[in-house]
Image 1 (cartoon, helix red, strand yellow):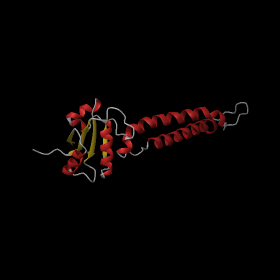
Image 2 (cartoon, one colour):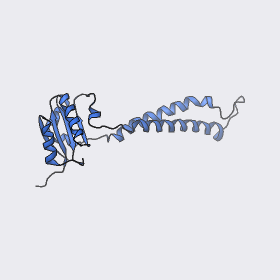
Image 3 (cartoon, rainbow, N blue to C red):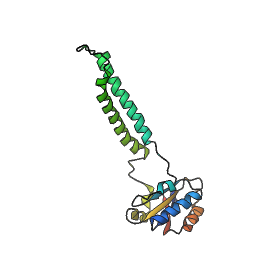
Image 4 (cartoon, rainbow, N blue to C red):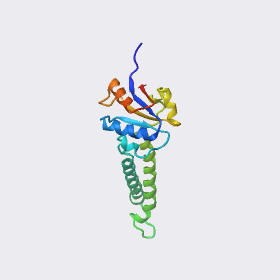
Length: 178
């Protein structure tokens, strides 16, 4: 019988405070690739597990700038190059009339980039995740709190990581198969 590759080691806790304490201890012990699961948001948990800011705001900013430039250049091209019309002596490059479409294109590009960037950078859609292989993880949406140390962490060793997690006084410690 072949052994399934291990995704990580997961500990289950009863209260959010115990999860927070465990996250702090795990991070202080040198584990860097960790994650926590909770039925509701817990203030300070992201910082405790070492969550870094993401690139979505940068993606949205760049897409907004590209959208604004696209809207402006498109209007300039149509009004001054492709089909110039001299109406009442108005100049071809009449920038005040370009403001509305430029603004709308900025918002459109930024909004679409926000959705697509969030999905791409979060790895979504993800129809399958290895943590669902653990039967007790079904309680993560009810009243249990979970902390996982990923097997890809440089400090991960199955036996020493299990021993470390057991020192945090969890309800249970489980291996998560891939």
